[in-house]
Each structure stands twice: as structure tokens, then as C-alpha cells.
Image (cartoon, rainbow, N blue to C red):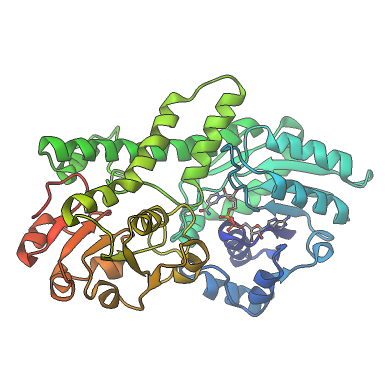
Length: 436
Ligand code: NAD
């Protein structure tokens, strides 16, 4: 089996590398030539724990290669995994330009029958459109099949998730049963529960999963906001809720909302998908609204406890949308940095991994520190935005020692109120009483 992967982002690179690790021969293609050049030199263009080592191992074994030449990528391919981006458009719907470009490129270059496996998150109906496009554009003597295989990996633990995921979803129409068997066989060695369904249901499972998880986050955040007002403590409330097996303990961490390249865009896309069939998805609209409000919450609290922010030095700790990734897409840190600068504050940011990416997206006046202590030294307040281990391991006493006024606004509840009291810092977190 020759496998090609279109797109070497978080999903494509992990897919290609892990398939190679499972013994397959894989070639990955990307339109960004500089990404391919870095990969050909065995450097990963993204940060994902363990990925670079696995790339190097499989390149050395001759199973994994990278090319910017579409003929080399698709000419000999039996299976092509589509893992290109499907970013948000202005109206919230998914931009399918990259999918369409990749499909055209496969059709132009294929020299064998090919199975197209869509890993990218695409609106319901897209795989059917991919089939129609391919039927129109492919050489008439070759056959194509289309399989939907949505991806559920989480950045930061993507390789673990590939090998130990909860489920594999494979969607196809009746006429592509043979292709389903081929794709299922690829995954069989993983021993992960596999479900087979039709194309539209597979596409919907991905959106519904992300929408449900986003709903859980906005729900617990609203409960946290109410806890603050009625004198309850979110840690105990979340623990108590999670003991109910119907609810479960996961995804009940209150904070300043979800970010990243998936939840924000996929929730908006699902509102659009529903809208297209005249269904107003009011619940999900509220989830999105709650999240937008939540991301701004710390700045409002800062104004309350620090006072006017003009001319104040604020440390911003953590820029990635979550720990163990360099991805800053739709990160709460970006919203907060913009608001703080809008208020006239000086922002000094620290992140162990994501600074290079942040520099491309953040306001130019943000300064960057090389260490936590450098960011908080002389600061009037510190915002904790990403719960990196390095940040969680820094005792609050260090904040007391180095800040001008030790006011810590913790958007991820990294510390206990007891530690804050012991360390004599003003500590404002989510869903708990402030420590003043
Ligand atoms: P990404 O932006 O990191 O990578 C996309 C890559 O596709 C880029 O390197 C881009 O240059 C490349 N590309 C664009 N057009 C191309 C073309 N015509 N041919 C080949 N390459 C092309 O995106 P990502 O985060 O890997 O996400 C990819 C898809 O997977 C999206 O639909 C996303 O919603 C979905 N997804 C992402 C995650 C995640 O955690 N990142 C998880 C599950 C699903």
C-alpha cells in the first residue's frame, strides 16, 4: 500500500508519521515549501511532544518521506489522507478552498485507483461533493472511493491519542464498502473500537463531539461564575457533579474558556450547518457567547482589583491555547493581550514554547520574557492564561518576591486559595472567592 497525506499540519504530520510507525510507506505533501524543506531536514515545523523523534526514526527506516512535488505525492498513491486546513470564514462557515485544491491536485496526478480518506473536519455533505469533483476530474479509466475518517486527536497528546484513541469513525456510502475494509485494516493493529457508518453521520459525529465538549466547558464556566456570586467553590462543585457516572469528571475544569484551532471554528461551523437547513441551534449559540464573555473575564477582574491599567506592567503567563503545544490559534491569551494593550498596559509575555508563533499574531507592542521571573519582575499584576507545568510548579511565594504588587489573576485555577493565603498574594481565580 502506498499512502499519501495531503497537509503536514498538526493532523497530517501526526497521521503520516504514526502510519509510518505502524509499518506503512507514507509520503506527505504540503503546499508550503518551507515546511517540506524543514521536514526533509528531519525538523518538525510544529511542536508536538515526541513527534520529531518519531519523524526521524521513520525517515531513517525509509518508511516516511516528504515532498513538495504533487506528482511524487499522488502518482503512486493507493490511499490519500486529506488533512488540509478547513479554517473559519467570516460568516463562521468552513472554508473548503484547501480541500478543493487538494482534490484537484489528486485528480490531476493520480495514476492508479485511489481511496480518498478525509481526516479534515468538513461540513456534512462535503465528502459527497469530493466524490462528485473527483468523478468529474479524474482520468476516466481510474476508479476512486471516498471515505470519511474524522480525526479526534488533541494537540499536546496527539501521538498518544493516535495509538490509544477512544474510537475510530469510518463513514462511507454503500458503493465504497471495499474501501472501508481497506481503511479498517490499516487501523486494525491499534485495537481501538471502530464504528462504521454513512458519510453524513461520520461528518456529523465530529462536529457533534466538539460541540458537546465546548458545551461542557461553557456550562461549567457559567456554574463557576454563579459560584463566585453565591459563595460556593467550583472545585468542590465540579468534583461533586463528576461523581455522577452519567456526567463523569472529565472536561469540568472551569477557566477562561476554550480556544485553539478546533472548538471555536467547529462550533461556529455547526451553527451554520444547522442554519443551512433552517434550524437555529440556540444552545450552541449560547455556548459560543458564554465562551466569548469568559475570555474577557480576567481583564474585567483586573480592573476591579488593580484599578486603572494604564501604564501598569502586566505579566502574561502562557500564550498557547493549552499546554504542550505551540498553537496560539484563537487562544484566550490573544484576546487578553489585545484588551490589556487597549487599556494602556505594558504587556510582558512568557511561554515556554509558543513565543515564535505568538509573535506572528500578537500586537507588536507585546514584549517577551525568557523566563517566568523575568516576566513578573516589577509587575503590577500577573495573568495566568495557560496551565503549563512550569507555571504550575512556580510557587506563589515567587510572585510575592518579584512583583511590584503581588496580584495574581489565574484563569486556569493552577493554585489553591490556601497557598495564596500562605504566600500573601492577592489571588483571583475562577469560581472561587478571591483571596485578598
Ligand atoms: P494546520 O493548519 O496545522 O495544517 C494544515 C496544512 O495543510 C498546512 O500545512 C497547509 O499548508 C496545508 N495545505 C493547505 N492546502 C493544501 C493543499 N492543497 N495540499 C496540501 N497541503 C495543503 O491544520 P490542522 O490543525 O492540522 O487541521 C487540519 C484539519 O484537521 C482541519 O480540518 C481541522 O479542523 C482538523 N482537525 C484538527 C485537529 C487539531 O487538533 N489541530 C484535531 C482534529 C481535527
